Length: 239
Image (cartoon, rainbow, N blue to C red; front, side, top):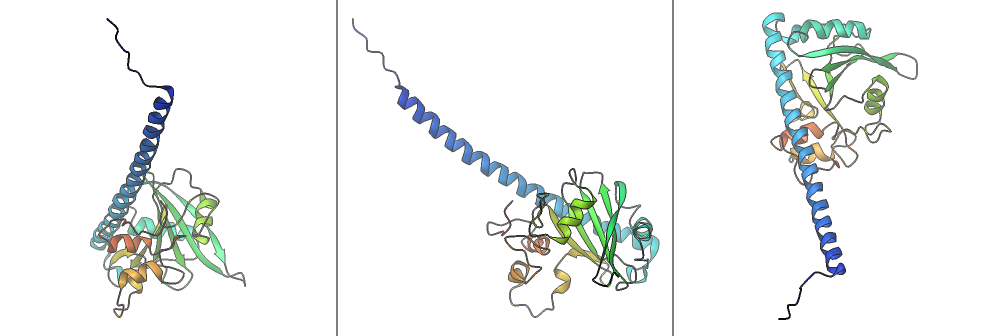
């Protein structure tokens, strides 16, 4: 009795493999994107919580934040300030100095330190010269500090739109502001709200210079918090 042997042709096999490859590539891309989003959302919210917990505990030991003082003269003094007010309440393994920046007349504008946290992230803490009673108000948070060094951090902070290191604000770098009047940290941008804004989310996305944009800027952390610590589909920075 004759039996016909049904089999796929080579063309059919190749087409099937191509379709499987395309589906796998699309699925992998979505999985990687979802993973990156989750890492940013989780670590950003966790760091926000840890910083404010540190403030609460430090107030018990050192009094109200309005009374805190320090010195912006050198990075060494900044380190002394950090260790006094935050050192006991944050888990870190080392501190390095930030290169000073100067204006056109040679005056020092910023000093600061880099605090390497035990989870592999890095806090870059800056202080404006003679403007804040020695209080470090601008804190930048690098989610992954494995490839960071002092020069890389400085390059990213001075040119957050694009860096040769590959670090981008709104993806790798997020900014917080330490408000001593309110005794709390907040994502950078909240402290600039006046109460007259009709659309706060639009401010965080489109404010000139600082708004979260395609190139990334300081208010991306504020946008994520405003959205419930979620990166929504219209988040403007490519992850």
